[in-house]
Image 1 (cartoon, rainbow, N blue to C red):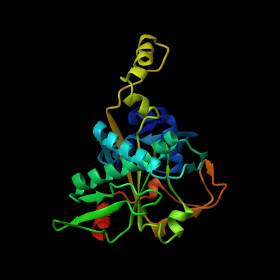
Image 2: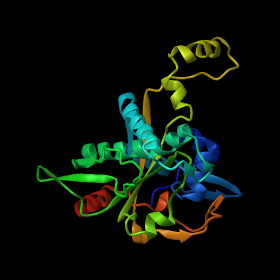
Image 3: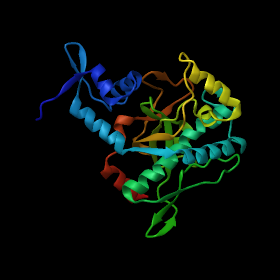
Length: 279
């Protein structure tokens, strides 16, 4: 057995180049990062961190600005096509609703790119907005021997921000026959919270304030939006989901949820090939 090359938590965070909050979530909540507690302090094996980082890089798809614009356009059409403005935080504005749904749309496009480039599997997404109708399956067609057909397996795509350690589904998404999928793919989306400001940074409405920020050191800057990293974390079959009333750091006060920690998702190349074979 190879000797462990242990480093401190601070060095591990610096090594991975992520925030302490995300690091803590990946270690304590999802179990993606394994720690070793020695003399009351957490330490981490550098070689294991390298494996973690390599898998992350291999599973990350960077969407271009043009792809982002296409996804955001679709999100806006969904909102104005009858999407409910009632969210988990209560009533949303149209801007908030579009901001919520764009994560899933970006994830779908990233997964499409991932399956094509990594495994040579081409899928089609439903690129039409269906007013006042929820489309339960996110894969519309899959290529089979040069022709596209409907998938044999229902696939749902779920997305969240980079900090989250769990795939979380509402009870309707699992218990209602016309809503549930056979498998759920989970992705973390690195979309900046000010992405809309970044898109409009050169617009006359924003340009003056952007220049003001750039001329004053104490103000944050409106940066350019050049790419959106999507981290495809893996997938879970519906029967493997866990029915719970809480996850670390969050209580579900209004009913049960079906969840799976990212560390327990299927994510090896073999896993993906087996899933593709079922589609």
